[in-house]
Amino acid sequence: MQGGGSHGAFTWGVLDRLIEEPWLRIDAISGTSAGAMNAALVADGWAQGGAEGARAALETYWRRVSQAAAFSPLQRSPLDRLMGRWTLDTSPAYVAMDLMARVVSPYDLNPLGLNPLRTILAESIDFDRLARAPIRLFITATNVRTGRGPHLPQHGDHRRRPACLGLPADHVPCDRDRRRALLGWRLCR
Image (tube, rainbow, N blue to C red; front, side, top):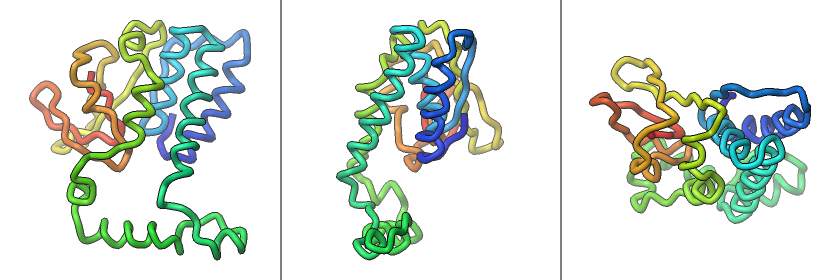
């Protein structure tokens, strides 16, 4: 499944409908960024309660994301709301962040490493259960030296997982087998 927040939310609806089908059997699932989150939610939810568990996991996660977004400073401007435009192009917070991102490192913009998705994911996915899930999960990262995407195993060192969950814009190097990988959504397990 592909990444991108709005693509991920759209894919939630597609998955919800597909999972309703009694004939559907999922052996493996892969994704990147928001797609990886959906993939992990489906695998974990299915391990917990079958098809209905997967549907419930997706809905709970995306409802939490939408509730958290209600408090984001990145909102449409009052003029855009009045005009019925669905763009952030004139949002003061968005314009300020866009300008800052061109001048300052993302690491300097968020020195405390605050990440609302980290909390939402930690509340939404049981990573110990996910490691034992019957649905195989395929997540890749990009090796910054080669540009290739090493596969991150579904089973592995769970001690690293809290640091490996992040916003797609939170690109932090992650060591794996003495290789540096730059991960958008990281599942370093």
